[in-house]
Image (cartoon, rainbow, N blue to C red; front, side):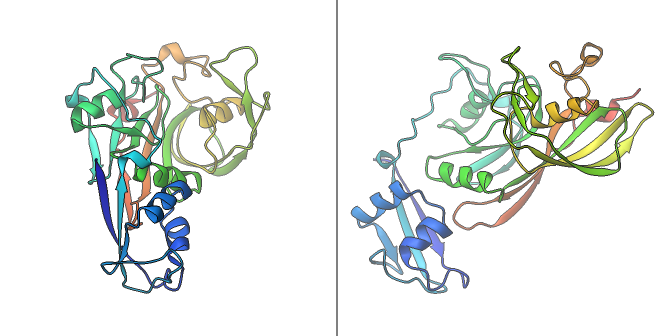
Length: 294
């Protein structure tokens, strides 16, 4: 049976927590997986089995063993990939961050679909690859991929709690104040299922922060930080304000004049599962961003 083992060192901030709290709150291990760790009696503190009610101390070595059978996540089955198309920005034993090209889907939408980023990453790894999050097909830039089901829920929790942050670059039409925050709820577009709209049905809060990096006579290059992560959030909000992302096939009326959507996931602050070591990863701007002129 396939298994994964991790040695974790208790920090001063975690000292005094009961082992149960350490696993759930400090390491972000899901409740169901903690249950299997407990009933299998496979948690070791300094080499010895301990009850989940045992307090941990600074410097304790906690050994955790996970078995594939304990995870409900289906084993991914991606096909038709090309390893040469994968540009790795960062990699360790648990995950990798890749630079997704514009125009490639993150993952298949139907059985047997090939040529997606996850297909290419699977070919690169020669082993299963797990989707952590996605970015739109037309968007390029940094994307996290998990190598095993153990770190997948931890990474998901780090993203949902905003402890993993991402910064985008976008060229938009027109000029805006030097910096600002956009707070406009986003819902469905009742006339086009591909699109979203401000204030549409089932709208959810959407908050975006930006500042201007560069201007041309008709366009602005922005650095954008998302506080929330709604579908098409950047694209919908800036279009609503009259500054659509350049080349956006859904929201820019002038899109046919451009080669791509000028939106790029440029920078990521990643926390590594179990150690929670921060790592900053940069995805270089594509040449097309540098060549864009009026």
